[in-house]
Image (tube, rainbow, N blue to C red; front, side):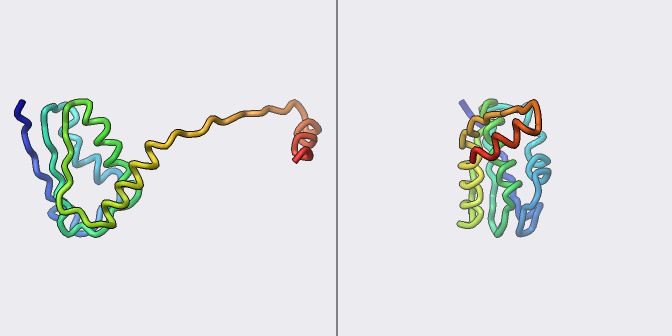
Length: 116
């Protein structure tokens, strides 16, 4: 199967930094209904990506891979790669189960707190 290859030169769009979720969403919007595409993101001269941008890129990658859209990263600086890896790791972590305790009175709440 042949994949169409689109190269997105990020420096032409964002100069040296990417700092918002919407920056990423705007880039991939036109591919949401596509399939069999390789998106090549050229990070040449991009020195910074915010945590929110990195998280959005990871989320978009996961969503678009379901449509057989591949992501390729080129010329990625170590600090940008580190932020992308951190974002991917945080999104893969399981959120722990939360126990909710309700109290019917202030006294019951007070007793509960005093147990600690």
